[in-house]
Image (cartoon, rainbow, N blue to C red; front, side, top):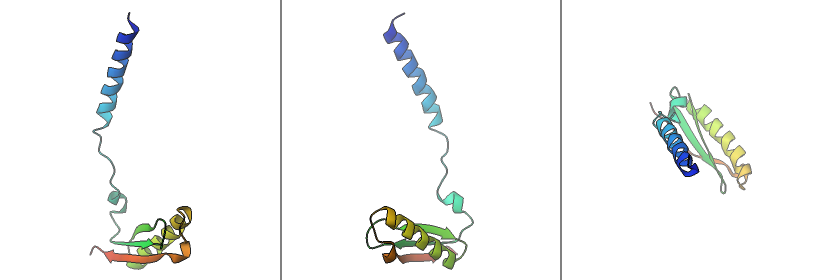
Amino acid sequence: MNTTLITTCLLALCLALTAGCSSKPKAKYLAANAGSNCHAKAVPTAGEGGLAWGPTLQIARQKSMNNCIRYAGRSGGLPRTCKVVLAECKR
């Protein structure tokens, strides 16, 4: 049997199997936080900030500050410059 034919058949089989997996539903970010009504975002003057959800505004603010401090240090920013710029509750 020709190796080109075998390779083509294997490639077609792999593509068919992969295509079947692509239609599976993906988990949404918000689904993990479905019970959390409040969210907050903290950002440093440079680098990455942090977004967090929580059951209360105070918890969301604290978690976002913690995330900001962690990510700012990793992304070249200064953790001490983190500030909450958005904090609100859905209900």
